[in-house]
Image 1 (cartoon, helix red, strand yellow):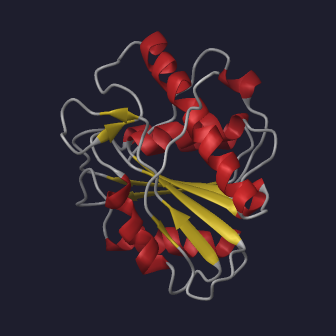
Image 2 (cartoon, one colour):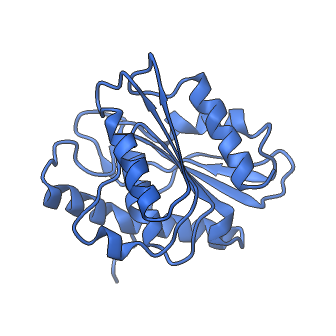
Length: 219
């Protein structure tokens, strides 16, 4: 029997006990699901009837004893990055299908929040699904665009990109380039470059992300 490509991690259920929407966090390189799930605790007060999931990436991270990676940090050529993204893809797709099936919801009820590698994963994979998700929030990442990217886009949705101007890991230009390209392809994109912020998420980023979710979920 073929091994199922599955991932899991922490989750936070809505206080109401009623689940109508799903938010999935995709963490960055060397981190784990616990890192971003705390954002769900903060947002849940104003985003009702929503369950928050934060799965661990599928592969152990050699550089972090308790961390995981979506793909290897040092893969730099286009083919290497594409291979890493493609290897991680089935894990993400399976997780999305599992939680949608579990709660009897549709893709339009799902929003993805990525940080760094998690943003790269979400921007690469979610538009390849025929059924559009509610949207993507991408913190401190970039759009990996292989040669066939344009032809592989099957769905479009609102995207909010937030990036620190002083990011020392991924230059903020990456989000500017992503916003321009996605807009050209027909995505509704909001871009905010935050001054005096490095590779991370600040209070303003959390507040802006929350408001974006409320908007796309029509809350």
